[in-house]
Length: 86
Image (cartoon, rainbow, N blue to C red):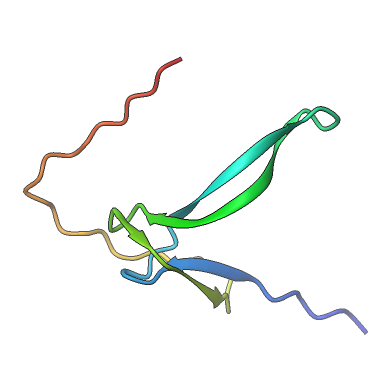
């Protein structure tokens, strides 16, 4: 008998339903693996779809697809530019 597939989850924005969300965290450098490893997750979450602070909702995925909200209508506000420094 084969093992049932594990239940998969996604986190979505409680405002718009998008899965394009992030959460504040700290990462630490692991000398052994030579990779950044998550150390602490914080409560603050942000949605890149509706550009707002949000509360994350955990939902069960019933298919391999992820959630994605339809694009927002064009705004009359000018778009912000992301500038990174080396």
